[in-house]
Length: 320
Image (cartoon, rainbow, N blue to C red; front, side, top):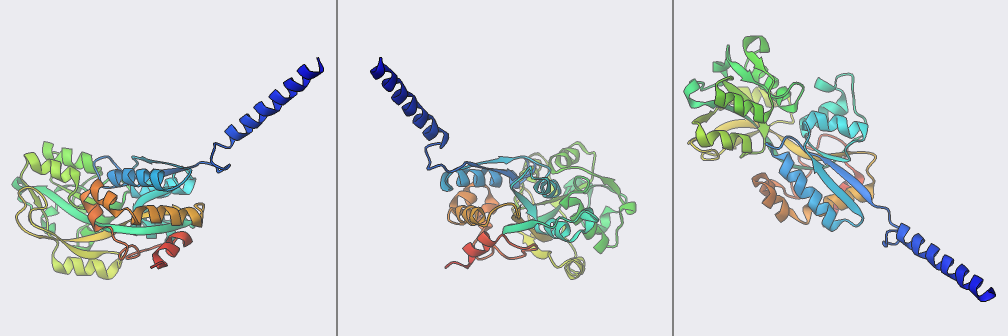
């Protein structure tokens, strides 16, 4: 009887040890960290890049469970970073600047704890029309139905600033607040005349439109571009090469902001270092996810950085 009790006690102790070990997850007691990555609409550029990042983090950072989700893009992502529903997000550097300084759509809603991981590639403001519309320049937009992006979006701010630089107010056009996908559909159906799309080129929504429709890209006048750059220093000039889209034979003068990956001060410096390293030591995977991934380089990762950086990310870029 005595032996039986001892045996029972030893078995109970052994079971407790097994349960305790299982509770540690078999990884030295390290707690799994979830990383939610905000992207954009499925027709845009952020979505495939965010998915590639999630894969890289899961494969290269211990005890991380990362996932990418489709969102309303830049402005929505900043708000979701602020409320903690996202840990990392792809946003435009101009939107990050507005948020950190309480400007534009963040007037009175300043976000103090935004931090930058890296800037990634140029996001070009593309102005798209169907060839049959006869629209050849910005000045031709007066009186036309213009898709300026979703209300309160980064694209909408870009559209308004470009139009203003050309001397055109919203009262001079018929404003339509439409996302990338909606704008492409509306162009195809003849419900709008021209659409603004801010994204890395080639953009899937425009590529799809150009397959079955003859499109034209509207070049900015150099004077309008110069005026824009003088007022908003986060813009740069860029040329969209001929042949980027089916049927567009000439180069197109445009302006770009930069896409960036952002977080908040809640993300540790150690994790900031780890996610930065995972991206920039696997740039081939980023290039495979989307054509703009080929434009992501370590040398340009701090170009146009418009908010304070995560110290861990900064540390990575200082390393040789």
